[in-house]
Amino acid sequence: MSIREKNTSMYRTFTHDTLEAAAKPSFYFIGVTTGHSSIREVFPRWAEALGLGDVELVGIDLALHAPAEHYRAVVEFLKADELSLGALVTTHKIDLYAAARDLFDEVDPLAVLMDEVSCLSKRDGVFRAHAKDPYSSGLALDAFLPAGYFAAQPTDVVVFGAGGSAIAIDWYLSHPSRGADRPARVIVTNRSAARLETLRAVHDASGTDGVLFTELAPTPGHNDSVLAAASARAVVINATGLGKDAPGSPLSDAARFPEHAVVWDLNYRGDLVFLDQARAAESERSLQIEDGWVYFLHGWTQVIAEVFDVEIPTSGPVFDSLAAIAASTRS
Image 1 (cartoon, rainbow, N blue to C red):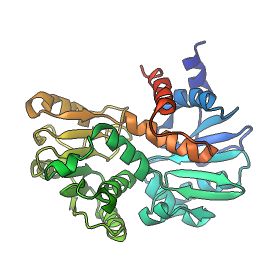
Image 2: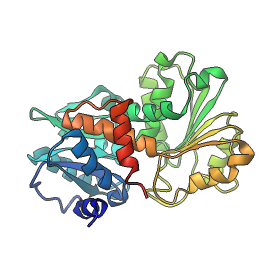
Image 3: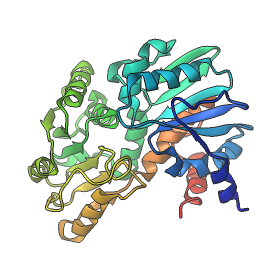
Image 4: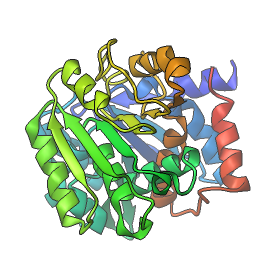
């Protein structure tokens, strides 16, 4: 049996009502289809490289926008189970925090500001909630956008989807510390108004003077119209989960990307229709196309560092080594 086969077969997945007490130190991945993620093969190799010891990665799959009691059951289990060390939360970041915020002993300021949680950890008996996306999304953006990209000329950012990742991206790009290197506009669309209202509230509470527009976009055609009005060089982001957690794309095939746009899908796995649409226009519109792989690397390493109380640099030889280990598992 190969290492890859061994790692895949060892990966276990639970739902909110099938959780079992951990028999060894365990680290959890809370998502929708966690068994399809590359992390099931990457994590054992990272654990060995980082000296984390005999620890198991365990998946917890929950339906999109699951009932609050499902989220509470998961959080109550993790809090009470002695050998459950912490978790990375994806997709459910806003819903889980809304359902279970009273169960945390400590919540970091960014999680409070953003009303979302992407990392659960324990330290000296204290059960903690963290928002790591502002850092991991920023690190991913910095990996493919040159310094001063937005200062060079007025440039929009268009984000489809107003979940936790969109909130984090807006916070990072609009932060006053960036000075002139901020978008002319951040434009966020979503199929429901409630998510847009949450994003607006976080943006206003953050104290930025960055320009944010929100658009209710119940159909791909609405998103097409928003995209058509974006600036040249716009950074266009699929933060909906479509293409991974659900099939499809936020755009129709008739969508027209701005010239010289940077097109970023936060997903790296799935049917990736959004990326296919961008690739079809890549030459004609002179697009730069990025998938979610670097975001995956930073998202996981940020959470692993917190849960296991280890230092993982965000660049340099150690990070490059971890990136190479992860890349070796990709088919």
